[in-house]
Structure formats: C-alpha cells, structure tokens
Length: 284
Image (tube, rainbow, N blue to C red; front, side, top):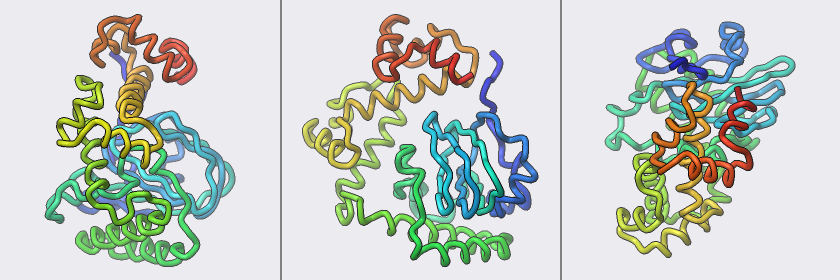
C-alpha cells in the first residue's frame, strides 16, 4: 500500500540536532526545506513561532491564517501543510518524543500543557505582547547554547510555562487540579481506546467518576459532550487514514471497529458532511 502522506523524520529536516533537539530561525529552516510544502507528518514534536510573514497552515485538516506572533504546536502523527506568503521569519523547535523522558520525574509531564493536548483548538494561538520579548530572547539563547542539552530542556520548559500562564485567564480549570487531571486522563484514555470504547460510561468507569460528572466536565472545558469528544477522535483517525494510504473504505471501517461499511459511511457523513470518498477526493 503506497503512502500518500509521508512521515518526516527529524534528521531529514533539522540541522545541528543535539541529542534530539533543534532550534533554528524560521528563514533558514525554510531555505533548507523549501520543498516541504506537501501534506506530511512528523515523528517528533514541532513548534513554530511566526514573527513575520503571512499565508496559511493546516493541522489535522483545520486551516489557520498566519499572523505575526502566532505560535503553533504539533505532536507526532498529526498531518499538516503550509502555504507561506511574503518574507517569513520566526523560530522553529523540533524535539524527539523522548527528549524530556529521562530529565523529568514524570515522563508524561509535557502532556500537562494545554498545547500538547492533541486538540487542534489548543495548539494554535497568539503570544501576548507582554511575553514576546522574553520568549524571543530565550529562543536566541537556545540557539547559542544548543549543545548544553540540560539548559535547552530547562529553557523550553520555561517557555512552555510562560505560554501556559498567559492562557490561564480563559482557562476554566485554573486552580482546579483535580478536574484538570481528570480531563488529561480522559484524553489519554480516549487516545488509547477510541477504537474499542465508544461510550462515555466506559471512560467514566475507568476514571472512577459518574457519566454525568464526565459529561459536565467536557461541556464546561471543551464545549462538547463526552460522547462528541470520543466520536471526534474516531472521525479524526478516519480522516487521517483516508489520506495517509490507499486504504479501501472497508479496510478503514474494519480498522476503526465498525460493523460494516454503510454504518461507517453514515457515521463519517454525519460528522463531516461528506462521504469518505468525497473527503478523500477533496484532500488528495
């Protein structure tokens, strides 16, 4: 089966990689990777800060207009592409999945940051003016001291905390660590089990809470019911499979644990507004 959306490895796009991390100015990165304009996935974490330029970029089929001081985060496996306009500048950071694992007591610690949630709505935002100078200064220091891996880890965590703090104003879970942990655990459980577990009550049982509590939490923070959150993850995987390889619709239905093609097609059309075949034609 031929792959339609290739997986890009860090060694193919990064320069001066030091023990799994690269920090580079955007202009140089684009000059070296000028042909990287087709839809692709990464096997590493990727963040990009725009300080100049325009155009559009897409993450998991959601399109964003580029504006100065916009930043986006991507986790391994997400599909994206870009179409830049004018003179581009900013900073790019690529780091491997295990970059923080041995450094932190909690291997999954970066998952606590909202922009590593795997939800596209949390991954793209504008850096507030008060934080811009210190973040750019930190990126410059990172480029200078990139060989000092512990300094790089600490500096990136510092940037992550600054960005998370600036978003807390609109975060309904600010100060509520119990529900914050519940939501993170829910998203992690959905990521592991969305093929086989489709009902909110299944996840509520795994979290030792009531389905009503789970649904109220999702409505408050995500603006969707728990059932919608689960269905949206299944739908996202269906869209990825439709464009990643030449899978038959029946193969995708089987992969996602649907009983038959017609049920899968009805599910997909209800969520996306088009049939799987129409979606594939549009995006390939």
